[in-house]
Length: 74
Image (tube, rainbow, N blue to C red; front, side, top):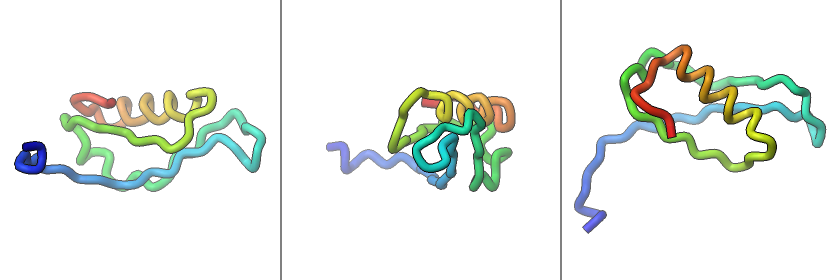
């Protein structure tokens, strides 16, 4: 049943980091975002591989909200 459901999707990769080796730098670096204006009004799902303190994720969500004005971020 789920296989019959078609949802048009786009995907991209973003690199976000706040660590050098095993130490946090306290600063978040975001790279790989090429078309933020293309995200305006769209629903965004972020898939993260590692969450430690949440600093990186919270900064990424804040940045996307400010720069792209998406409909939602999950």
